[in-house]
Structure formats: C-alpha cells, structure tokens
Length: 160
Image (tube, rainbow, N blue to C red; front, side, top):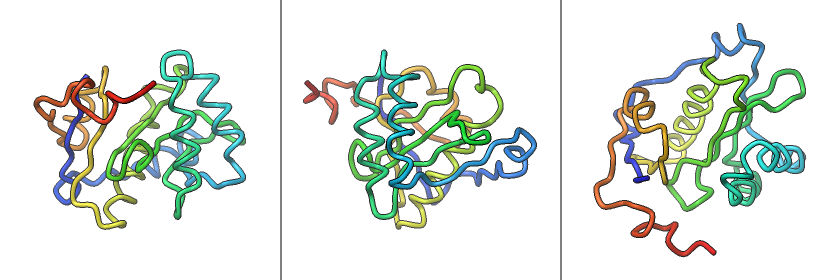
C-alpha cells in the first residue's frame, strides 16, 4: 500500500462534465452546510474499512476554500474526494458507492481535485496509501509509485 506521486503540471486533462450530465450526476465542491450529510455518507459507506475518512472529510470541508468534492444524483451523495485532508499536497480519501462504480464518477472527482490543486499552485500531488487503485491512477493521471513509501514509513505510521 504505497503512496503515489502525480506531476500535476504534466498530467492529462480530465473533462468528465458531459459524461456526468448524461449519468445524471453533478460534481460540486462541498460546503460547510453539507458537512453532516457528507460525514454520515462516508461513515455509512466506507467507515467499516476506513474509519478515519470521515474526520479527513470534515477537515477538508472546513478548509478555505473547501477541499472536498461530492458527486450527487439529485440530493443523494454517491461519491466524494478530498485533497489537503491527510496532509498538505495529498489527494484522498476518495470513494464511490458500489452501485455507481464504473460510470466515471471517481475519475470526475479526481479531475476536480487535481484541477483545484493545480489552481492552488501545487506542481505535485501525493496519493496516499493506495490499496487497489494503482493501475487506475497510472492510466488516468500518469501517477507513479513512490518507492519505500509503505505505511510504516509514511505519515500514516502514527495513527492510533
């Protein structure tokens, strides 16, 4: 479960707006007023295997500007992605509910976060603690594995 490095200045552009419209999905920056619903969504859908994610989302939502994006169908959240939550310059956590996977929602959320990080002045991003998505990040944004970045040698080694 290594970290990955993204050269934001040299990654392919991700434009999923038209596809998301066809899927009936809106991707938007979360607001403070969304906090309760976002945290409940993350806990209910991802808390069993990633209990710290809701705290990271909360931190991201209260950033200035908020560094959490949500994907919604109507008024229901179906996915989320954050940056600058674990640490400055880090992408994640991120997740899409199982019934909505394979529709490009994760890619759209990733694109919004990377675009925002680029606008903020980041040249690089770190995707922390990648479990099953190494191939996705390699294909989508040319991310590379950071050698020697296993959890016991990363920012995650101090978790309680």
